[in-house]
Image (cartoon, rainbow, N blue to C red):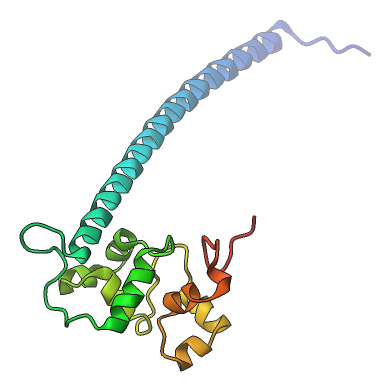
Length: 179
């Protein structure tokens, strides 16, 4: 059975279809504008990340130079800290040679260290427990202390403790990242 609609129904359906097509076209234009804005935001984010990385690298280099005592003029981080002991010097050398230590990240994460005017590596060697501070995004001090309570018992800086173990050979993170 075929139903015949009056021409007015067909005209109404054609008008609805035209409205739906116009609405769809408008939605496509809006979607393109959103995609363009998203691309602009992604580009701006990427540029900001590159700038932050560059600044972090420059800051890390400056901290390294100042910590080594080779900087000209007054050092950036040698404000009010006590003299370094031989034991601390050995720990600092081990720490600074590790990819698990990131001085720029440490300063960005713990701005109070900047306010104190301390060398970030020396600060971390002297104050790793309270509050617990991470040496970088790649080393979880809390997890390490849970896994190795002897570091607390021996009163050894957790990262230094880790670096003195065979477990640290070739490690790029703690806990190790799945490969």
